[in-house]
Length: 407
View 1 (spheres, helix red, strand yellow):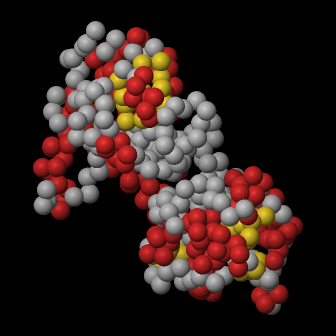
View 2 (view 1 turned 30 degrees about the vertical axis):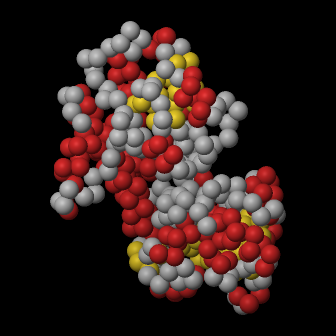
View 3 (view 1 turned 180 degrees about the vertical axis):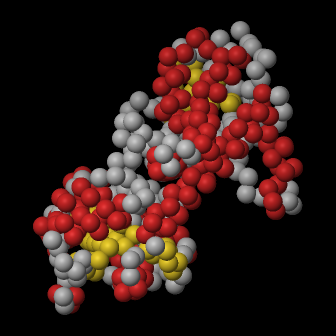
């Protein structure tokens, strides 16, 4: 196949989301012609207007600049897939209602656009997938009868909000079945970084899942330690500071807090399923992290007359200084508190929701405050109200004492 017949370098399938759009910006900024294909008409219209549909550092000005050059466009028309040499699929493996991996999500996405696949294309799976999905994709393309379509799995590794730095700074994992296909994938991603790490697809699938599960387990350990110290009436921040102070073997211990978002718990549960429900460490980590809102509420019930209390939740995003509410444990905290407290007041400076109030109102109306997302602005809170601050942001948070109760 003469690849000069392709008029575009890259089409990103699912391109207006939090993985696809930063990647498209990065590739277009290095001179490639990029099309963002997405079925979400609203997101496509926002992108084509020059506005970012979510917060990403350094993206706002770059988007307008690239649109004006024509190197970047967004569309809902799947026919553009036929025009591109490289197809980057940012559809991952979600969990179903029973917390089992939906391994057909990626194949379904490709089947929907199968009529536009062409010989000579390279299909790159970019989002996290269940082990074996790359092989499933290869079998699907063979079954569809499209010859000479290569497949690579090159997982994204960026932290949300820092994509336009980390896409250029971090090594890129490239996994394929042959040196020839590896060369094609390397050539594409060397537009972003010089350092390439090669694995087999099965190794790369586990490398991505192991990375997220490892972080999730570390957060669970910190949360368990915090609960142990807290139940003993001891200050975990002081203990952690002493452990880490000029001591490299404890330097990577994270602080406590809600460990959530669209990846960590999901990918840990994928490994649980992959290992026939015998990933005890991962299951335990999920119980600890997902149980932290319940722990906080149980201690609030010991300290206060919760049914007569107005509780303010500060921060509804899944992490600090983010506008992303996906899988945030703040919503779990709100749901449980709504059944136990007199009133729950929610606020977040980055998330628009008609049910939320502003911070000033929350500080005025709440009887007690819980910092659920460590937004930087909460470091300077000015309030005489009790503040439950598991993150250690304020330096003045109330130690939740199981033996204390106020009327």
